[in-house]
Image 1 (cartoon, rainbow, N blue to C red):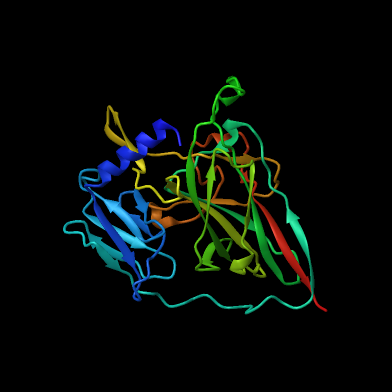
Image 2: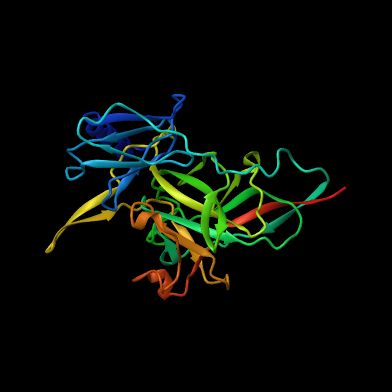
Length: 325
């Protein structure tokens, strides 16, 4: 880790040392990993793998209530005044239906949906904490299918990297934690989750253009009407992969007052016009009750990607297709 990054992380921790360190747990006192903490004003943050998050009035002066949610738990509202060091969430009714208890018998073959990747910075989505991107995959088979791995296209470097002397310029280090969610198809939009497991991965400056993520252990079977696979940025991590409590938006002074702009995170996600059907959906996690919309000009205003005809994120899948004995 270079000195600049080390100093930044040190400053971050020294500031948050004065913050309220709160842990979210379940009824059996297990940590609720990566819970969503919304401020109710279009901003928010996430708990880390240990269920911890940092909140301070010095940083979030105008926030008097927190709205906490996590997959498999009832939503919770709590005041920021005298915020407790431990918050317990109650388990919600289990809506997941176990379709398969074990791997089906018989032979299988791997079918691949290839990812789409490119090097054009201007044709990429800049990930922010407030956004989640989901890609729809139809089920075109009558046979049992299980997802074995994801092929996740990314772009690591900034827009001016091609102007540098690559032999002498060092790549700027970063480490970003992503969460992957799997959703049922509910009337053409992402619906209930297919697993309560926390599926996460880290991307950094050394990552390949396509990250292959093995998800076999999570037993994600493709429903008859297809499924959605989403990517959600949780934030930057330290060198050990621990989620950092960094600020998720910047305050910019304008003639109309202070405007809060979401922080963007590397790596970028390359979009494409090579996929004919529109199958990418987005939502703003802390706004509009997290409603999903198709990534389309009718739903999204002032998008340079859409103006360029780039409607889809080219996520790839490897799928096990089973044949009966």
